[in-house]
Image 1: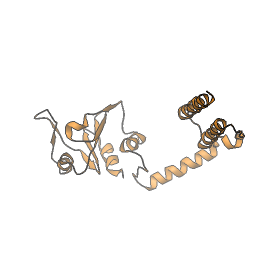
Image 2: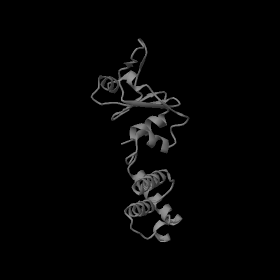
Image 3: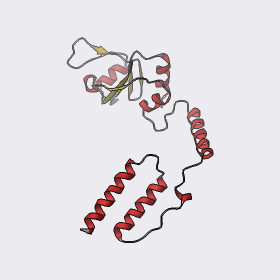
Image 4: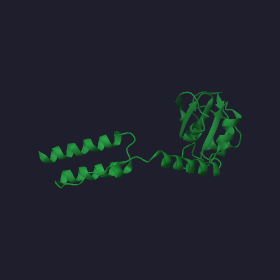
Length: 174
């Protein structure tokens, strides 16, 4: 019975840690360590205020400045961001996100914001090869309807009626 209660408490702690907003890694690690110690029947000390304290405004600003400088220096390098996150971060995608039926054009996934559609392809697929060559791809099951690429960048294909600003940012993504 005690083991079941300890397991339930541990699971609740894990769920609450995952759901907590703005918690630091140190706080999460300390809480996890404390939970593990409780289930084993040992005691641990609670972290001090200095260990759980959030970074000061000056530290945060310095970190943001370094991040912005690094991003500016890489000229379009998304630093691990997806194409979607990159364009959203630049404020170029607006409106609601709509999941697209990507399989209808042979893509792996796709989404749309306003007039901008972006699809992710397997670069070896026939559909991708056609779009990259400037040809159109017919929608599966809709004879006579097809799409053409406004731009191609790696595995991503931009379609729709994007602005020049969106096309330029799309092409700069690395």
